[in-house]
Every structure is written in structure tokens, then in C-alpha cells.
Image 1 (cartoon, rainbow, N blue to C red):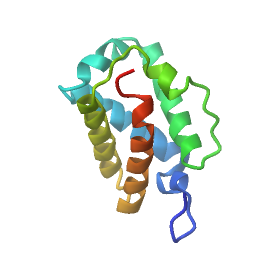
Image 2: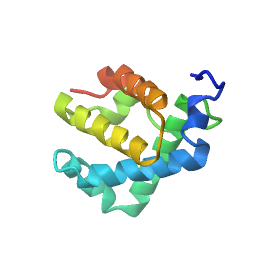
Image 3: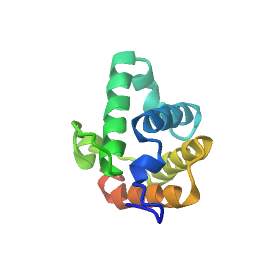
Image 4: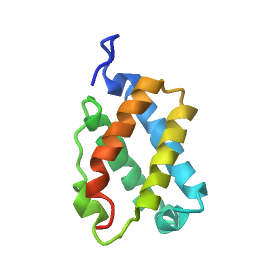
Length: 128
């Protein structure tokens, strides 16, 4: 996806460095969000697992927004199967992502594009 300046969404998110910061801020927001933090506590207590999850998130976002990254993780249904994530939890995750984008001064058009991507994945995440 490109805006009228010809920059890909990947570039507008700050490339690899910007996406790394955004992922860190998303994880931080999830850890502080009482509605979903319980889903992340066990991962946060295992630094090796958390590093792997962050890596896969950076790859997923990078590859999905036009960057050179290759995603090496599981597909969305496989990654979320058995978690039975509710629609409310999904919305909290989306809110945390939007908050992290705002913290990183991402423009409104780019936020809207990320939001559209997130909602396109909803059926692959919720109630599996």
C-alpha cells in the first residue's frame, strides 16, 4: 500500500527500526491492559519465548506492509487455534496497536491502513 507520496506503508511505519519500536510498544501496552494482560504474562516471564514472538511480529508486520522481511512464523489460524480469543479481546489488542502507532507518531492514513489489515485478519484469530 502506498500513499500519495509514493512511500510504502512499511516506510511510513519507519522501516525495520520503526516497526521494532512499535512492536515493543505494543507488547508493553498489552502487558498493562487488564483485559488481555493475562494472555501475555506467561510469555513475558520467558524472555526467550518473548524474543521469538517479537521477532515473528516484526517479520509479519514488515512483510505485510511492503518490507523485505520474510515471515517465518505460523499462519494466523495455527498461531491462535485453541486460544478462543473473544471479540472483546481482539478489540483490546487492536486498541493497543493503535495506541502504539500513536506513540510513534504514525500518520492517520497509515493507522487506517493498519486497522484495515487487522480487521482483515479477525476471522483468522477470533474464536478459534
